Length: 183
Image (cartoon, rainbow, N blue to C red):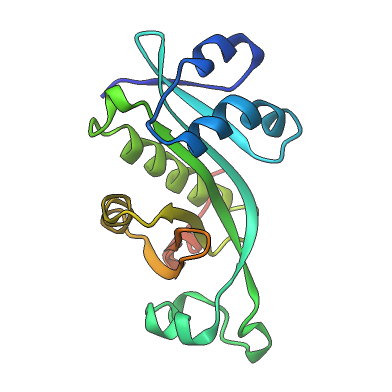
């Protein structure tokens, strides 16, 4: 699939206002909050275009997430995190996928997979200079998006029924830390 992307800006707001992914909360974020948050570097929003139409977007930021040692063991992540007891039950550095949306006319065309894959690749590039253990997101509790993220290698950390989300992690394998730079 051939898509182009650009960062959200005032120039695209007419197109942003016509975007509809079928989820009011996601639409509201893009249409009412994403530009301001992008302009102040709180989170960065990339718009995906096909034939000059916005077909999807993804917003990311840095953050941290608490993962207790029980969940680390349950998810099989013990070998990917510091062994020093000081770091047990600490908050771990993350790239947080704040929002992801695909226009409802373009669902099931690979746009979401492409967007998440780009974030994973960006994260691997990032860890050369900045510590990061996970990519994190909160998926709505619908079975379809949870299965989608699991197919990309995300683990379900926990379900939060109050917020209506499943908290999910993608672990950055240690081998990505162990490569030689070609300067």
